[in-house]
Image 1 (cartoon, rainbow, N blue to C red):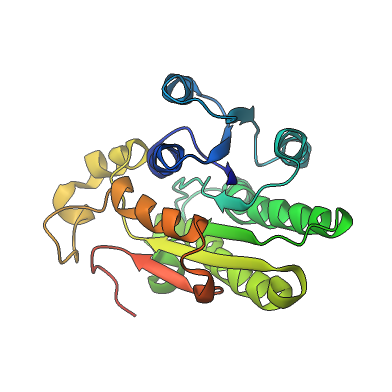
Image 2 (image 1 turned 180 degrees about the vertical axis):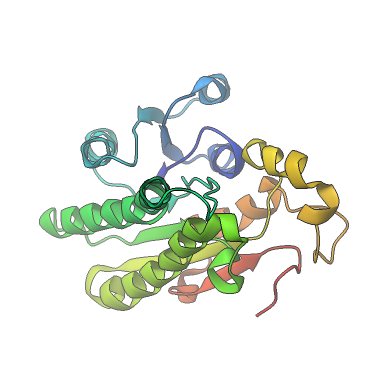
Length: 249
């Protein structure tokens, strides 16, 4: 299958890419700044996969990502909206600074996935593509339980992704043959998360987990593979929790 993965250069995205490449999928690999790991990875595979650089906070770059994907693939079979940021914003910040950080998080974590989905569904209609399109949005347990006070914008953006998934499923399932599913991880051990682990400690990060270790990208990617391969289509609109038992709903 032809798959677009945003935020493919590290962490959860990189593990998703590794698993999908192992299964023989061709992937449009989105990154923002550093693509060294992706370059090294692609050397090990013979595929039609390719990299696309884009800043998802800008509409021009989002348009370019969509255009490049369609130029190489004509149209993808699956889109995985994985790219995201989690930048702390203290309440003590000046209102303008706090607002700027809030908007940046919403732009990348929520607005960009919505724009990407909107563009591909519109193209699907224009090109009369009847094959199934699967959308996977990487949300967070923060969408349901809330988050610490410095991460208000992060929790809001991830809550919005859940609503986006449900709306896409309800609105475009029967009419446009679109499947949409959310994944809601808890705290995941990644390079991006390491700074938080260093700041507050392993014990605080792992509080509430009922297993013997933090969730890792390898615990998430198998579920992504199942969805990509069409094994969970009748879960459209739903959210799959992967949080080590740290939040049960």
